[in-house]
Structure formats: structure tokens, C-alpha cells
Length: 121
Length: 281
Image (cartoon, each protein chain N blue to C red):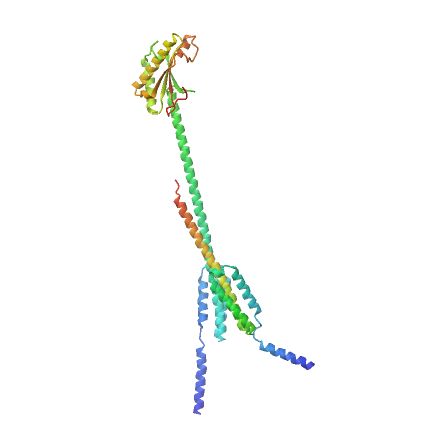
């Protein structure tokens, strides 16, 4: 009995030894998923579809690597996927603001033309 | 022995080659460094993307250290990718901040244009009101001027309009001829009519009750006509003059005293309004 406990401990130790690489990067995967979800809430599809797709692709790779026990690679891919998603969201906000600025500039220009068309008598 | 030597040399070369093939700087690290430098140069970087710049620099420094330590090129590339992405995100945030500044500026300009347009509108409305007020003042002044001229003629406001009474004393007794002294008054009436081309006059003759009605009617007509003739003599067109004999029917006072009768013997010049119509007949 004693012997079997020692044996199983040894087996467990061996297994831990095998996984001496970083632990399964659940935190990074979760973080990447959250960042992708957040990016999807904006107009990312319109302004940064390619970047968002890149993020999703890397997340899928990260999940596969995690399942296959390639923990370090999974963590790296998940980190990259998260940053890709953040980049997609930032680019979307930038392009949206730029669009607003252009519309506002046009509106002001139209207003100015209108005002100059009705001269004071 | 010879073979052993050769093998050793080859191994040494291989070892050297292995060292030499490790690039000093990987292209990924180069690219990341360029991006981080670009971000750092943005005037709005510290304000809009400080965290991204810090993260990008930290990842870049890790990538460079990993490279120096000759760690797995995959790890070097990964760290360089993280640095690049942090820099990318920072650059987007900087551009977003620039766009937001542009929006604020455009909004301010828009407000300025709206305010300017409103001010111009108010100014134009004020100018219109002023013009209206000025024309009202002018109309009032013209009216006052007209009144002064009537006053100068000694014409009085009645319900028939402005009426100038020419007293009996201007006529020779029981005659229809105007005395020479009446000329000044006639001239002034003519001058007034010349100035107010639309105004017409109705000249009404009146007598006292002495004598027959028919005689008085005739006398009133002749006296009124004498006044009309005098005016045409001063250049007033006869088209603008009506002559109306009123006879003895419209005394101003009783005919029982001499003074009263003298007052009743008169010719009245009734002025129309500037458009040529009379208040009543």
C-alpha cells in the first residue's frame, strides 16, 4: 500500500516534470477572448475587419496549441491575439473619429457658404 | 591522424558558422524599434498613448535582451511582435486624439459661424428697424412741415379738412372784387398749391342774411369765383379749383349784429388731403 502511494507520487512528479514549461495559459486565452469580444462590439467589422480576423485566427491557433499541450506557444499566440484585437479596436476608434471630424468640417463649410449666400441688406 | 585533424577543423568551422549565423539584429526587432521610435516622436504620444509607449518599450527591451542572450528566435520574434503591436495601438490612439482635437476645433468654428450669422441677422434687422424709424421720423417731419405751412396760411383744422377763411374786409363792400391787400394771401395759397401738387381746393362763398336768397347765392358765387380767378392768375390750374356758392345758409355766428353779419360774409378755401380728396362736401 505504502509502495503504491509512493509510486503514484513518483508518477505525478514525473508528469509535473514533463509540464515543467509554463502552466496552461488559461488567463491569456480568457484575456484574448475578452478583448476580441470588446472589439466586436464596435464598428470593427467596417474599419478593421482584417485585424479582427487576424486576432480570431491567432486565438483559434492558441486554443489548438493549448489542447495539444504546447502551452508556451499557446500563451504567445493568445498574447498576440489580444493585442491584435486591441489594435483593431483602436484603429476603429481612430477612423470613426476621423470620419466625424471630416463630416463636421464639411458641415461647417456648408454653413459658412449658406451664411455668405444670404448677405445682410 | 590526418583525417582526425580534418574533422576537427570542420567541426571548428561549423561551430564558428553557427555563431556567425545568429543575426545581430532580427528584422522583427528592427521593425519594432522603428515603430516605437515613430510613436515616441508623436507630439501627442505622452498624452494619448503613454501606457502603450511604456509597454512597447518594455517589450522591445525584452526582445533585444532575448536576442543578445541568443534565445530561441521564435521568442525574440514574439517579443518584437508584442512591441510592434503596442506601438501600433499607441499610434492609433495618437491619431484618434488628433481627430478629436480636430472635432473640437471644427465644433468651435461651427459655433463661431452660427454666432456670426446670428449677429449679421440681428445687425440687418436693426438696420431695417432703424431705416423704418428714420422714414417714420421723416414722414412725421413732413407732416409737421405741412402743418407749419397751413399755420402760416392761418388755415384751421376743421372736420372738412384745413380751411382758410378770407374775411369780408378783403372784398370791396357788396362787391365781388378782391382788394389789393388780398394779393399777398392769394400768392401764398398759390405757392402752397404749387408745392403740394396733389392738393385741390374748394372755394366756398358765404354771405349774411341781408338781401334776397338769390342775390346772396349769386354774390357768394361771384366772390368765390373772384378768389378762384386770383389763384389761376398766380398760376394754379383751374382743374384743381372747385367753386361752390353757399349763399346765406351757413352762417358762423348770428346775423343779428353788424359784427356777426361781417363775420358771416366770407370766402372759405377748403384744402383737400395731399391725394386730392376732401374730407366731406
